[in-house]
Every structure is written in C-alpha cells, then in structure tokens.
Image 1 (cartoon, helix red, strand yellow):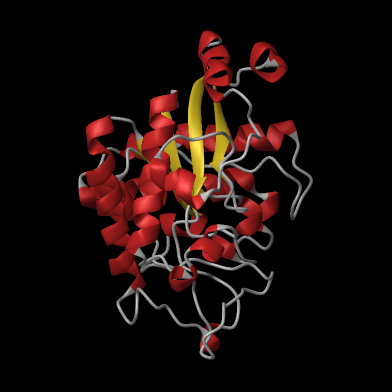
Image 2: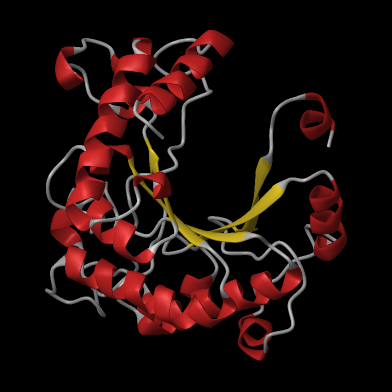
Length: 280
C-alpha cells in the first residue's frame, strides 16, 4: 500500500497459484476443494482486493499453469514423463505437467472462475508452454503425444477463451520475450500471433538480460535496454498487424532487476520510453 500511495504504480499482480501449485487463499469450488491445493496465505482475499480497489489499483491474478509441483502428485498421469515411465525433471529439478492434458485445462479454468468471483480484474496465465531446458532426448508427453506443440498450445488458448468468455473477465498470458521477433514457436509452443487471437492482453517478457550476446548486433543486450525494447515492440506490432489484432493488447514486462547489468531507475524508464516510442 505504501508503494501504491507514494509512487505511480497503478496495478498489482497477485499470485493466485504459483510454481508450488498451491492456491493462495481458501476456495469453494468442489473440484478445487477435492484437489486440496488451497492455503490461507492471503487470509481475506476479498478484503485485500477491496482495499486495492479503493486506491484505484487494477488487480491482476497470476496463475502458474503447467509448472505445478503439487498437482503432479494428484494427477500423475498428466505429468511429463521420461522414457522409463518416471516423472521427468528439467535441469533445475522442476517437474512439469503435459500442456495437452485436458484434466489440467479444466482445473485451471475452475481456478479462473473462482478467482473472478472473488473480485480480480484480470486473470493472467503464466508458464503456458512446454519445458525449455533439460534432457529433451528423454522426454515423453503422455497427452500431447507427437502433435505439434504450437497446435496443442493454440487449442488450449481457444479452450480458455471459450470457457471464460461468459465471465467477461479479461484474460492475459506471459510469453518469452523472443516471441516478439522470432519465427515459429521457439520449441515451446508459444506464438505471439496465436496468443493475440485469444487473449485480451499479451505480456512478452522482453527483459534485455534474457537476449543472447549479439542480439540485433548488441554485444551485451542487458546494457542497451532502450534499443532491445524498441526493436522488440516494433517487431511485435508488425506481427499484430498480420492478425488484425489491436497492438495495444501488447503489454510488455520490463526489466527492473540486476542481471547482465546493474539496473538503475534511468534504465527502467528507458524501457518505458521505448515502449511509448513504439506507439504502445
């Protein structure tokens, strides 16, 4: 509240469900109760949201989708497997749910509906992708099978749109920053143009530190935040034009943490300016 009262911040993101798989507040939906993933991390979510609304703050609820350490224990048949039939883990030891599992889709929609009823202004879906690191030679998707990952992800986008359409709540998605300029789906099923068709807002994580050495000719992209963001947003707008989507659906995540460079307030504002200069 101090940050909201004393700065220009006008929106917050609250974890409804983070990577642990635990929901941050008590729930009533029978499916969610049965799964047993709810905690009381936020004792009174309605009161909390109400107090934010009193300060004219837009409240976004974040739902970690296919990275979920808890649900894998409840739906083991929906886990990404290794060829020996065990649970696959990435290089960090993180387990993943198969993005093609319709059981998981139903669960995520149930969380979304419950959260909408509690007063969130927007539902944000994160980790809507396939794993990006780990032993990819020893990975099996029991639900997705050999279907193209982009096709599976697009089906999930459409499912979310259809299932949550009656609630009228805006839905958004986080994507890798490279989706703004790269072709294809980066091997993880993510496509900016696909996301723009189904979501109200698309948030590419265009952190300059996450772009490789030599990106658009820059030796250390983290040190050139304006240039990286301006190029990425220009490319994203061009992609939006091919789908007839409103480019103002694009709402980038910008870097404010020290990685690759020490990030000063001026470097954060340079990214904001680059976004505005691109017309967003």
